[in-house]
Image (cartoon, rainbow, N blue to C red; front, side, top):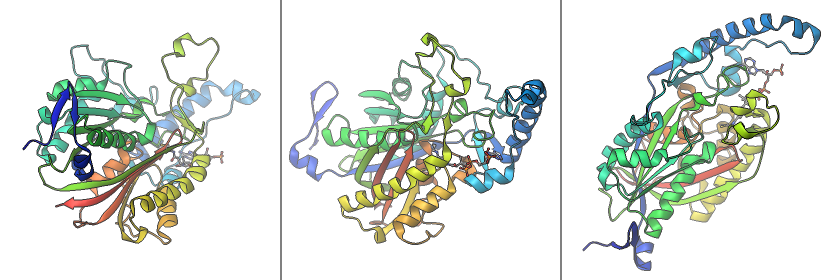
Amino acid sequence: MNRFWVESIGRISKTDEENELSRILISGTGLFTPPDSVTNAELVVSLSAANETWNAKHRVEIERGDLEERDMPSEKFIERASGIGHRFLMDKEGVLDPTRLRPRLPLRGEDELSLQAEICIIAAQEALAQAGRQGSEVDAVIVGCSNLQRAYPAIAIEVQQALGAGGFAYDMNVACSSATFAIQNAVDALRGGSARCVLVLNPEITSGHNNFELREFHFIFGDACTAVVLESDENANHGESWEVLGTRLATQYSNNIRNDAGYLNRCEDGERDPFELVFRQNGRRVYKEVCPMVAEHIRVHLGEVGVSVESLKRLWLHQANLGMNRFISKKLLGREPRPDEAPVILDEYGNTSSAGSIIAFHLRRKGLSEGDHAVLCSFGAGYSIGSVILRKWAD
Ligand code: COA
């Protein structure tokens, strides 16, 4: 017997009993990795050349004390301070051109697929294949990411159409926590009965908001897109899947990570520093303030769902800084994490914003058995923290 019935357009109702019985599963994940691979050494060479030119051009102002000379970046610093060694970008040539220092992305026409929709579809296809689903079986698409390439129509609706999905679709932005916040929305939709199969997508073209002109920021980000399929177990195809035991979100206002790009910029009266319209942060303060909050957030969440810290087999953490992840894991576990317990992908991918923890989950989940517990956790601008506690449901 079909356990669902349509009450009105797009709304599926379940009895209270069915709500209690249904488990929400992650049944597939996907990843789009851009083809352009960029090392720290390449970024250092291009920014050094750009800084030399800038310093020469502003020699008089620098000597007068009106401007500060731009210091040279160093590979050693990047590796030591962040753990990032490499990243993938949508366009390497534009970023490494010292006279440009930003990706070159050809303008697309209105009848062409947008860039974010395109990378969403690639990641979605992998996730859907893993879940054993067709695009037409999806009835909610949520695109969550740090930056959307246009205000409207929603990228998610474009993806919905391209995949032949039904139901509804929308975009949302909670910066680096967009994936975990979107997963909670997906879980709520599945539990509440407004969807049966939800696709969460995180198209992070972070090279568009990164400041490649300043050494404090030029190495931080990488591009990627992730996809997650969520459905309830009575619908799932019972391949490899992960039960969502709980989601927990928290926010606390902070200006320590900020990007003022927005639709009101063109109306603003007054001068802005152009660097305010791209990513900027006080990294040291973020590091200090966010790490203890995250460790405590996960500890409380585990307690709420009745999972002990000792039984945790894996921590798929947001991938911004190696030291941060070590600190959080150590504080939570009460000891140094083993390398496979808190997998690191930021050495290869850089900070891919909301995609980071999902990439870690996608690439580093082998070796866990049915019944094993793990946590997926993101944190970033807002501040925002999102955790998803998972139990391996099926192999
Ligand atoms: N090469 C060489 N030197 C560099 C450099 C580079 N690429 N970038 C910065 N420096 C310099 C700074 O200018 C500063 O020099 P100064 O002492 O002469 O002023 C010095 O190195 C220390 O800079 P600081 O920014 O204090 O370094 P840090 O140890 O805090 O590391 C981050 C910087 C960004 C790696 C680190 O703070 C971080 O990752 N924080 C967390 C960020 C985060 O999670 N954000 C979430 C966003 S998603």
